[in-house]
Figure 1 (spheres, rainbow, N blue to C red):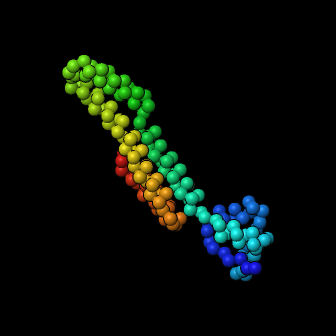
Figure 2: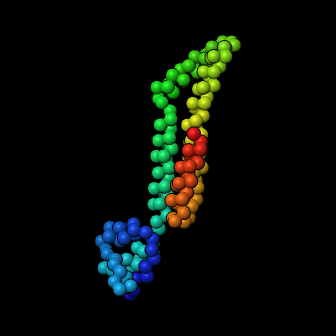
Amino acid sequence: MAIIYTEKGNRLHEVIEDAGHWLHEHNGVWISSNDIAVQAIIDEYNPLPIEQEKAVMEIAEYANNLIDSNVNPIKAKRIQADALAATIRKGKGAISSAEQAKLDRYELAVVYPEAIFAQYDIEEALILGQTDCALIAGIVETAKANLDSVT
């Protein structure tokens, strides 16, 4: 039996080796340690879920780094404490414009990460909806640009 080889990326060769087989091209002909077993691996191997998972992880890390680099945790806690105090005073009656500014600043601090999370969800859905491995790398770069535009 001759191997009918379909290029599916370097990971396919790792999967074949992990199964205890080998596959090499010699003078334009693919030869293997076990043609039937190797052909079954080639036929069944689908790189798409692996590439999708890698892409999702890459944009998740990118989104988290955006949040971490732009939201100082100490400053965020201070803004939150100021907003809580202003909210309590607001509940007891009118608040000053300075206290309202503290509330507004807190809302902006909270909306920023939420906007990144929302954009990340959109980008993840686009990656998981993609059916062509060759296009995933481009989607990741577009996703990063879209996440940058939220900041």
